Length: 231
Length: 231
DNA sequence: TTACTTCGTTGTGAATTGCAACTATGTCAG
DNA sequence: CTGACATAGTTGCAATTCACAACGAAGTAA
Image (cartoon, chains in turn green, blue, red, brown):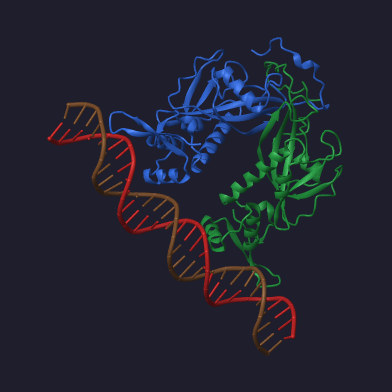
């Protein structure tokens, strides 16, 4: 459709006659279930790797997608029924032996964060089983399809680095949250516990949060001040 | 240049009926010239953006390249005549309006480090002007072709982050180097001076270097112990 | 011999961090 | 009504790290 009908500029050198790779987007969607970092996987219905678990993804559609970010959002919408607000590109993988459906397959990998108690995106459209799987299991088993085990590790490592730099995982949290929730969230991502006072000191040194004046989270015990991201 | 008679790809059956993007590799090759961080740019001979400066790069050749890393090495060899030992992928950019030669262009961006006094890679093959340009100028002018100014900024930011995490820029250095050289190198990358004692303390806390027993760098003043990367 | 420049180390006060205690404030059981 | 309880939020302090500066050491060059 858009093969040659896109030429507002002057006549340029033609696109090289080389065959191009099969380009896909893969989504590493992370969340926290039962206090543990988890990734959303789908069981493949068709060959190749039928029956194995894989990251949700889809083919790049240059007729539909304005750019890579838009492509990732489109795939997220098709597979999960909802756009992903906190999404970041991790990089690309590509090579000859990655996907038997094509002689050369290139995937651009995106990482997204979904709120803790987000409604399970299972009521999607044409999707098979989708399941949250704990990171520890996934990286231990490593029976994922294609090279997706390595992609998951990459996504987790990138996310842990962000937390280390106090780049807060707002994608995991509702708009308003308590400092305890934020800390638990970071602990789940990192896989170890943090010190409360150090954590809070670093937070207000960086001036990233602001308290919501009247709002408190009321529960079984003492209520906690609600905060929201600043700026 | 690449409109020659090379068409082994016609036989490859497309795996999906969707058209695929035009895929290129771009190289952000950094070095330190005159104590300042610099990037290697080439002046474009042909349209589009003829006469403007751009990162060296080339088209992905799925018939030649085993994977993305190999593709980057091949492009480096063709454009510079030498392989790049310290190379890392930064990510991919892609969209409709990136390159007027194709309706949809995707570039995978690599960052490489070249030793300080590396022989200028100018004696390449079919290349136009290639020139080291100081980072400060490049990011200020921003008259680079395509979106390459943004790619350069990305490469610099990634490299500065690595230094901050004491991921040492061995690519900038010869196999053996003095601590002073290493420090100057990091200072050039970061753009500001570092404290000598702090720098050395952090270095031997992480146990990254080992002294070469008898080797000293002798110069105009007091000789300095030579070190090499450990492990 | 002396000036000079870089190498390498040491010292010190400030800032950050880790650890642990303490108080505060609500719910809930009795 | 009262006190146990679990979490919220703060405080204190020792230990570590850090920035900054000074120092002696080692070579060249005049």
